[in-house]
Image 1: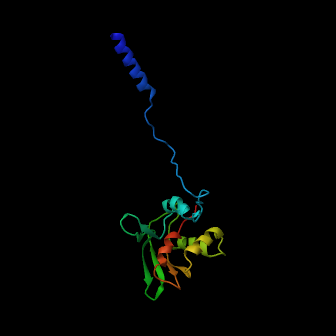
Image 2: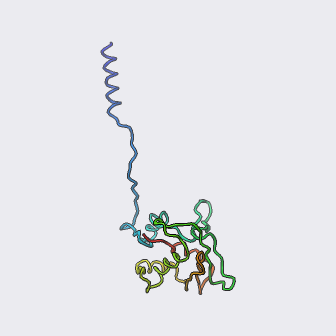
Image 3: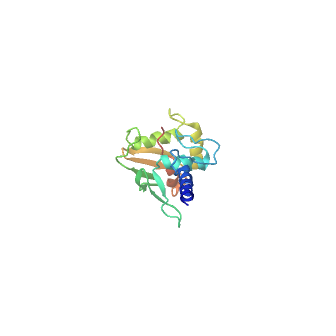
Length: 179
C-alpha cells in the first residue's frame, strides 16, 4: 500500500512539475487589414486603418472626438485647442485658442507657429515641409478650407469660404506634429 501511495504521489508531482505557469508576452502585436504599416512622419496613410492604429493613438488634433460614451454619437471635445469660436467679424473664419504649456516630444513648444507649419505641410506646395501624399489625403478630407493664418502666439484662424459650420470638425484630422 505504501508503494502504491508513493507512486501516485510521485506521478502527481511529475505531472504538476511538467506544466509551466502562464507567462505574459513582452511584445504587443496589432492586427490590421491595411497592406502596409502606416507612415509615422505625417498624416497616417492606409485609410481608416492607418488612422485607427497610428493616427488616433499618437497624434493629437486641435479638436477631438469625445469617445467616452457608446450609447450616443460622438461630440467634439477640446484637443490642442482649448476652445474655438467663429470670428465675430466673419462667421466663415474659425479662431482656435491654443492650449498653453504643451510641448512636442522633442521639447518644442506647441503654438500658432506649429499649427501654421503643419497646415503648410499639407496645403502649401511652396513650403519646404510640403508632403504631396499627405496633401492629397488632407485636401480630400477638408475640401472647403480656404486659408489659414496666425493671429497671435496662441491663436490661429482658419477660413472656410464655402461652409462655416461643421468644417472645424475636419481640423481634428489635420493638425499633427511630424517626427
